[in-house]
Amino acid sequence: MSDVETIRPRRSFLFAPATNPDMFSKAIAAKPDIFCVDMEDAVAPQHKEDARQATLDWFEAFDNNTGTELCLRVNELRSIEGFADVQALVKRSRTPDAIMMPKVKSPDDIRIVDEIFTAESCAIRIQVIIETNEGLEAVHEIARASERVDAILFGGIDMSAELRVDPTWEALLYARQRLVHAAAGAGIDVLDVPYLDLENLQGLGQEASRSAAIGMTGKGAIHHKQLAIIEECFSPSPRQIEHARRIVKAFEETDGGQVVIDGRSIEKPVLRKMHHILAVADFQK
Image (cartoon, rainbow, N blue to C red):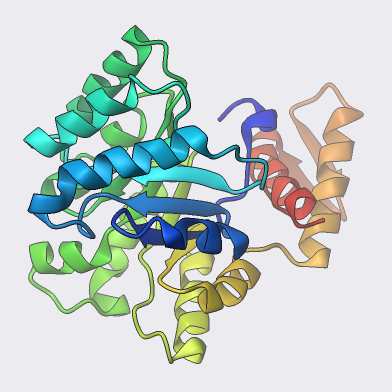
């Protein structure tokens, strides 16, 4: 993400099942940073084709001027349904901004989709769900597999089963940090697994704060009432915003690779984080 103009907030994402199009507009009205229609886990095998057609019809008809990023969670690429999803997408005149690819195990999964989209002149971006041991092992290569990749998402429930642990914070900390490392190296976003206890908003806030503290940039939601807490945890404070503005301005006024702010030497690589802070701040206005 070398072009700062491409930075956009991805603090929160909200799913709706592809089998219930009536929920789509309601979910978007809640103003998550990302709204994703789920054609994978939320759709039974016998309903895949009908859900695919109805969902793509909706995307083709919907004129998105909301500021929310629209995504489609396709089926696993290594399946008949996954290939059918991709093939159906490239035939449409209007598509979602991005697809979420589940169960990615190799950078080759990304490259195949990238080649298809490129051949068909599709501008669709890619967000990658890491939820298998193979994906966790290859996540650094996956994050750099294509210029289309904007974000990595942590599939914590499936990952806990793969790692043979309970889905607790402590047991999954290593996996989260590995994703953070890969995403930071590639200059892309990394979003945490949704918090499933809908009634425990305090627990949600604690987990979201922990995720932000280790470098994650957002977290999923299973209900719109979770969005405000998630977005607060992943939004910069007024002090951070002012600090970022000072650093960016200082670099704009110098030709060197470092500046001094409040007696501290700051090198140019820090600019990426500062631009991200300001992009989130501008989005909130």
